[in-house]
Length: 221
Ligand SMILES: C[S@@+](CC[C@H](N)C(=O)[O-])C[C@H]1O[C@@H](n2cnc3c(N)ncnc32)[C@H](O)[C@@H]1O
Image (cartoon, rainbow, N blue to C red; front, side, top):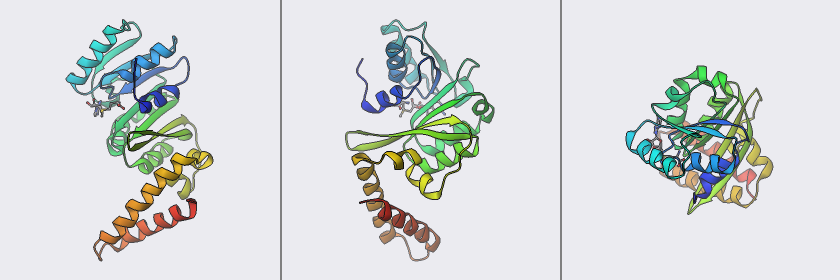
């Protein structure tokens, strides 16, 4: 089955023998990739909307994977069940992801791995998860077309991070590389534009953006 590099990368970060809950599965491409790749992975493919879940179910049937992937219709972590040890939420805004997790903090206490790929507000997502007893075990950047996506693997446990680590991602800072440079150069350019257009009275916002520009300039070669 053909899936895009972003979903493939997420799939490749899932450990063998995991029981996953894929929240917002859409067409269930990730779920199908996961169970085809690894005999021992099971997933619940869940979505809040009937349309996507219908397509998910049709795709799962096409690959005869009904015994390995269960479809559940429901909002966020409402579809959790006790066998799940890994939650995956990708392709949504960071604030939506935080909202989904906040609604079921008891679920976060039960699972050991959460893989998130927020489209924005990544720093807020990292801070939220670390406040709720997770640390950042791995991070990846992946480019699809002109977009670069962040994927973050959280594991149960506590670690403290500096402002700089929250901003860039502690694991991304360790690995760096060409995509890191490209991603954060774009972040620098967008902030340099923002600082020019912010009205004079946005002094606090300007202060925060300038601080981020400084961080970015120090880190980029
Ligand atoms: C842009 S798609 C992303 C699909 C896939 N996860 C990916 O990364 O490509 C977002 C999907 O999340 C679903 N969704 C949005 N909010 C949700 C929520 N609160 N609970 C469950 N699914 C949700 C939407 O219906 C949609 O199918």
